[in-house]
Length: 173
Image (tube, rainbow, N blue to C red; front, side, top):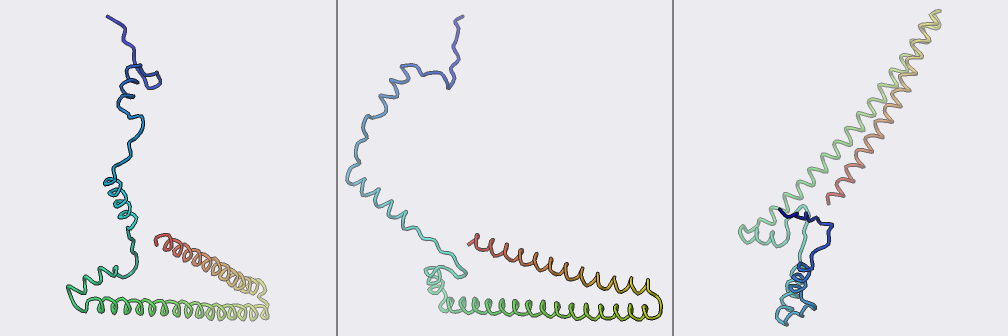
């Protein structure tokens, strides 16, 4: 039995392999004929003319197609799109106003609660209940401070969330 040499990708090729490859590859590429050159130019022009359309409404050619199939379809589509925009703006306006009202109501209740706790603390202090007065007055002040800090953190997180939504929306476009 003869010894067989195992070939790997790192070993040099045999000279017969090199000769066979050099025979199949032309030394100098031949220029394309005039007709095939025009075909290449034509193909390239078609590829460059590719068109991308993005938006809330269909492409104008598509819209014209709808209009040919169903006269008045384009007008109906635009009307519905405008109505949807107005509806969305009304919802946003309602949301902003209700958030502002809720925030104002929370501030009013917080002030009323703080004034009440300080009033109770004052009455307890006058009636010689210093420990209870200090506890209620201190709890009221700590509650007000905690509410202020928590509210600031909540607003900051909401702003970050909205900014992230805007960034994601712009990246998607």
